[in-house]
Image (cartoon, rainbow, N blue to C red; front, side, top):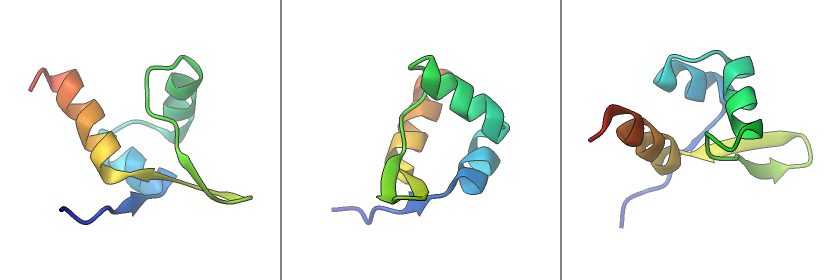
Length: 60
């Protein structure tokens, strides 16, 4: 089983090339995976979900 890495919004933005505001807009439009609440003030995205989203966008 592969290790799961949690990405914070800055890391998600770096990986996708999108601005955080665009990522949150896509989440509201159900076009990007929702993050996981790590604490009451902290959200993260499992790296495999971000990678899967990218692969879908690239048609891989």
